[in-house]
Image (cartoon, rainbow, N blue to C red; front, side, top):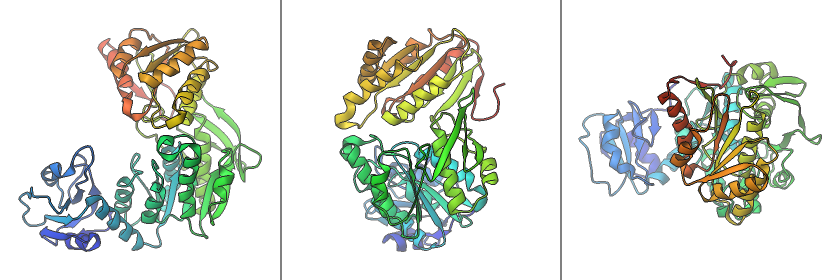
Amino acid sequence: MLVTRLRAQEIARRAGGRVVGDGDATVDVWAFDSRVLGDGACFVALQGARDGHDFVAAAFDAGARVALVDNDFAGVPQLGRGRALVHVGDTLGALQEIARSMRLDRPELHVVAVGGSTGKTSTKDLLAAALASRGCHANAESYNNEFGLPITLCNTPDSARVVVTEMGERFAGDLTALCEIARPDTGIVTNAGLAHGEHLGGREGVIAVLAELLEALPAGGTAVLNADDPASPQLRATTLATVVTVGETARADHRITEVLIDSRLRPSFVLDGKQFTVPLHGPHQALNAAMAIVVAHRVFSVPLDEIALELANATAGRWRMELLETDSGVTLLNDSYNANPASMEAALVAFAHLELLPGARRFAVLGDMRELGVDHDDAHREVGERTAGLALDVVVGVGAGGAAIARAARAGGIEAHVVADAAEAVGFVAPRVRRGDAVLVKASRALGLERVADGLLASAHRSGDASRHEFSGGDRP
């Protein structure tokens, strides 16, 4: 599927920049990572932890035709015919302006924005699967910020009729800025929790920033809210769009009933008289799927039977409730992408549902939940207390927040230990787990606890168990 082809001189016009090199150099894909771009790309040299300008030459070697660079960029590579630099005052601002202009060029494109404290990526993935027959494009992984969303819009194929954009928020005004670029027609707010509460001013600040998404919807648009979330009535009052609610409460416009979880943590449920099965893991995925179903059916008129079939093709993002297993018989639930109180609760509840053989043990490797502000101490203590009622056997706390979780778990009668980092966690858990045991790994992104899952898999490999199985659907072999 082709993306709108732009020449370097057109990119410069949209971005208010100037061209060095071949103004007719043409691109049909956009990227900010020189390691993954292909032939015909526009490489956007962003400045963050690393300066993208250091990788312009590598981007051209990988097949880029155009690079969007700052005005003071002096490292001009050998351009030649079919290659160009577009110099701008600010590459991020230029990328956003290009994406905004491309969105305005396509008023027929229906944009769905997915926001919320947790569940954004899964809901986005489930909705994209449900809308497969409607020419749907969705952001890759969690491209949900000030540069990921513009890249998603720039890479939306010409054939697409709908694009699902996940929108993340860390500061007040974030969703307003993203909506000004994407101009969503439909919005989903999965829930309002404490994620990024440190920057947003606690729960009320979270609600206020999520309201930005709803305020941006047109009067003829649709807002889908979580009927089970106490913040939804407050959010409802902020939009002129038609509001539809989804949840297990009897007050929901679309009520979820008969939720069941199979032996591999895949939920099934009934919604609007139809049974659905979700290939993602955890009871919380029932709500995520139901919100996606309601949008696909009500807004895009996809038949429920078709949605039920298409949902089977949904896949989980990396390090998000990945259910892995080695031939040594140790099951890993890797949910290490990020963590906040709501997602920690969801992961722990799902882990408790995992069916194990008699005598097998559950190890929960839990680390810091960052950016909670004044709620930090209470949130970690409450997670530790929650473990006592979930049939866990061993809690391993990683980092300062993990230590607080472990202390509360120990006070509740759970065996608990504290380690400094991911490497120490692997060294502690690997010699203690045995066939039939299960390990949950979860913490905020900064702790890098995916290394615990990788280390346990590598340990099994070194001990002679070379196989790794991933259960994202289908039956256990």
